[in-house]
Image 1 (tube, rainbow, N blue to C red):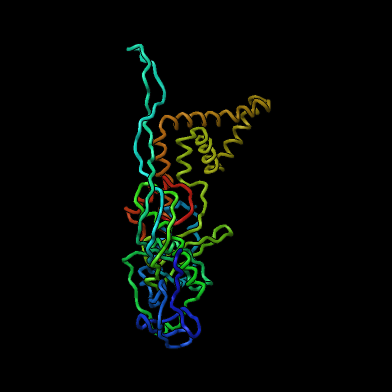
Image 2 (cartoon, rainbow, N blue to C red):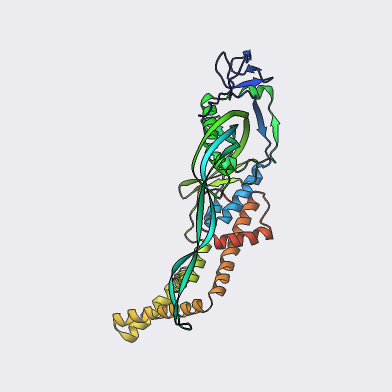
Length: 407
């Protein structure tokens, strides 16, 4: 049976927002009461609530530049760059709690091994006999296991309940390299830990305990795990002020969002902007659908030189009517050059797909990078380096649509 965890609360008003000067005495930030803990039950957390500020390392200008460069990586439509991001900065109050416990477990653990299994027989013409055919398979040997492990889990929650908060996104940016500043007394006193936030973070930490135990249990596989927790206690708790940039852009009557913490390396979450004409789609059409690519080329040239095309078609139509004096034959004669163009283009594509892909990449990327650089210059930001262009060329060419954090 697990031990119930209790946080230090003010005995006068019940607030969890307390400053502990020692392990048994403290001051309540909510009502101002000074108190002394005369005794604690086993498993009760007697730890101070730290209040810190994560040092910001990213400026708004850097956020904007990285945003536009990542938009290029995602191969968004070129007309997106005609718009601008509206950027705002939000301050989060992130509460984190760490729980240590000892677990007595029972489980079945498995170890894999290779084993040859008889698949059948095969006639050997040289010997004139049937020979056994074996197939190598992976077999798991299961055995009971029990023991005691020490585990540490953590839970986090947003103390400002009015703000959106993604704990997974936050955890991806937290590491030991982050720097923290102490808050001023006035700022620290203005922050009160909410009881429901405390309970939520503790519940998250406790929900991770099963996985933490599984990780510590020996064996390649595990099943039928059961455990009892003892000596369960909170070892640290902290509220960290963390700033986040949120940028919004309007495109085709819809708002799209990019966001990034002002610390860490994995900076962004985003809303996907679809681009049906992205480069990877065009390359796929060239390599997988030569005939479709040939028809698309015909359409592209007709649209690119539409006025010349209309003039040529009109003159050709008049000549065909004069020569054939028959509408059906005129229509056939009119379609015939287009068919010839598609066939010739289709043969060329099939013969030299690799060269066609390189030509399409060069044709696509040159104006794309020019547009990105023009946007960066208009904002007073550094344009793309040659290394970035090389990286983006590879990313745009192989891009697949997906949603989530940029990796």
